[in-house]
Amino acid sequence: MATNAPWVLAVERAYVEAATAPPTQALTTMDDAARMQRARAAAGAVASRFLAVGTPRSMGLVSDAAHAEEAALSIEAHGCWFTPTDLRVFGGALAGCRETSLAEALACDIVCIHVPIDLVVAQLRRGTHVNVLCALPINAELAQFAMVVRESPDLSQMAAGFVDGRQLDEITVFALGDAAIAYAAV
Image (cartoon, rainbow, N blue to C red):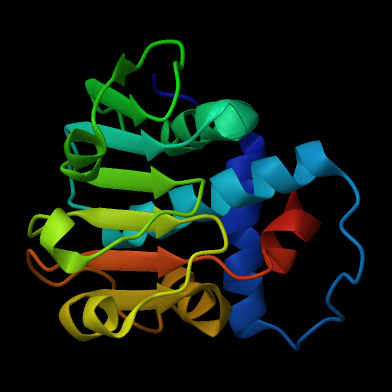
């Protein structure tokens, strides 16, 4: 699964530039659906680089048929840094992934959520990193018990090395915003 996808590395560089360079005007229109899918997948992979356990063995995807292509891009994007051997998917078939229950998908080292679900802390184990790559509000319980990292400015600060990512075996959650930085870089 190891890849060297230039579009993922370009997104990481864009987050570093967002933290170290003067701000640029954000994109106001995002009409290219395929580009946006790559942007979301790459942003999640960059977040996982700093927030997931060092050698993740498993990756879970929460998706549906409409988001299957984006879920596949998440696997490809994560391949820049990780090679999990256990790929699980909840919500639809995906090549190379084992179809599982939601509980099994959420029990992975890295979880990418592409469709809204009711996510509560009790569903996650210590050490899990979750990428919320869809419109899913972070509830108060999750915010209290997990390290929540927002796309802007948190991910940029982390990618630039200004703040640390994962510390121990805490639950980490990356909440994607508008993905403007990633979209501009893809």
